[in-house]
Amino acid sequence: MANCHEQFVDFNSTITLTNDRKKKLKTSRTKLRNRVRDDFKKNHKDDIQPKFTSQGSSEMKTTINPIIRVIDEDGEEKTITKYDTDDGIYFIGDLEDRKSVQTYHNWVKDAVDGHTSIPPSDKNTCVRTLFADGHHIDQPIYFIEFENDSCPQLAHKKNGWIDSDPREFSDWFNKQAKTNEQLRRLVKYFKSWGDYQNFEDSTKKMPSGFIFTIWVANNFAANDRDDIALRDTLKNIYDSLSTKFECLRPSTPKDENVVEGYSYESYFMEKLKSFLDSAKQAINETNPKNACFKWQKHLGSRFSCSTAKDEDEGAQNFSTPAIITSNAKSA
Image (cartoon, one colour):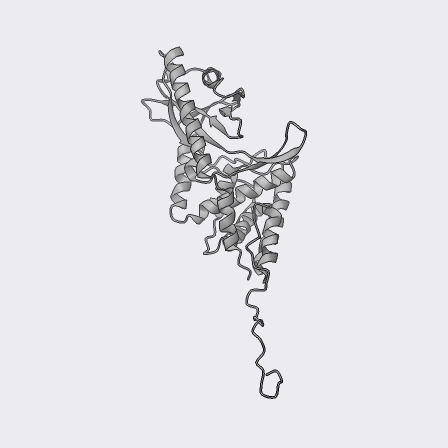
């Protein structure tokens, strides 16, 4: 069997955020927190003051460098990476003091407006601040009743106040990843696969990183080698989804089917089957270079094959000169 574990480890390094980018995210997050705090102290001093909690993939250490295609000022197409983090804004107090969903969205948007040259975007679930180098910070807004120790409620512009606890989800995942760090790597491989498919065909949409995280965690098959672990996890996910296409949230709102309404089920299952078939072929290959190319087909050029050996594993090496006998004939 061809062994591409080394190539996957290198791939993980390529798609993982650099320390420099992590610092940028942390700095941007801190500055936005200070901006929101200062604005509330000045303009809403009689209202509940905000608190903050980092959440999402950054708390699970599964953030990747996604790739997108853009057109520059000269009309030339180029590829750039975008990266982000979520920073929850929490208002803790009596229910009677809670403002409307739109009021909180407006206040946070006004607070961060002008921090960058790009106007903030007010989405259904968060206020997004974009930075010139491609990274952005999402700030979802929550309210927690002070006395009831209740579940946080997300300020959703379309659905109103809805129960949602991202910290519970992070705890659920981190508890599993604590016993095997390979799980984090596999989540990143799946997210990168989805990212590359979206890059190749922007007319259809692969599942989100949140969905991949649940599927991978629920179907994780550990192995000393990442390539075998990925193949086996792919098979487990495919078998599970072939029985019933669903993804149940493990945290509040518990058992919500987060792929309900996803309109590209057939497209995704075809992509998943193709990836699984190539994974099986790659593992059964005898030539690591050929195996690597099968993985690269689905993960893109960031999955480098430069270090993969172009020779059959286990093949006999005939590079040693033939032994010459006294009668000058080969032995």
